[in-house]
Image 1: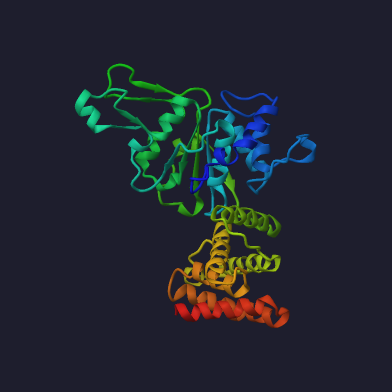
Image 2: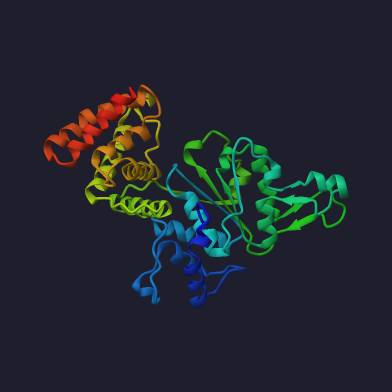
Length: 370
């Protein structure tokens, strides 16, 4: 694990999963490693009422009902589609579910405009085909086909970014639960074993890119993951993910609660401004997601660690915020400058302290980028 840049959830939380499996007495669907109750507990964390002799920390922060409906869907023969705005934790939830259910979250297809049917079915080892001809030995199964053969969870990221022919190939897999291999005469069908299912994700902002057909929609249960609006929940997510990233970088640096409040308030202000904007030119290109908050905070912390005095300051945080969110010039810079003048400046005059430094840091960064 020390040699991995980013360990998958089943490796990172291997001890927790082994413990939960050892005390799990609940009924388990198919080949699941944990019962549905223990899967939920692994994702959402344990409580005193669960009666465990060790604490299981919360890993995904969101409504309990979303997790429960996702688990119930995977216990059926339907696929699960997690849909929502960028940065709402869809991929992280999918990874945690796959890790808890089958201890393998790495059978993933990334949907793009270049994804082909081969990526979700199979391809061929050309050199082996030339030497020995087409056979099961010379076939390269896709992550989805491997999941079918093993009876585990396959994942499909950014489903709506894939073209319609790729999406249509999923219909037969989800409905018939097998893949035909017409190039072979014998052993030419791969049947899905019990426990196989697909977790797909889609960004709601991609609507209209490659809309799902009604036939494919019928084969998925939709779970819509909303943007986190509760300030306390969002603070927990940002703190949890940032601490995780800092451990990965071996950085020891505290995040003062006052600066975390400033970051959360700034994103809340910018979201409110985007909601009231009358045109796209008045909105930041950024989705202003929780994931982007984490990125801003990580950037500020690493800058403080490597180029500062190893103390996170409001001015550095403001510089990271402007630098991360100003993607269009001059449009985004103008929006951020307006925010600093109309919102942050009055707040700095009223509250003083860190807000003054935040205002100065934001202005300096805008001046440098202009």
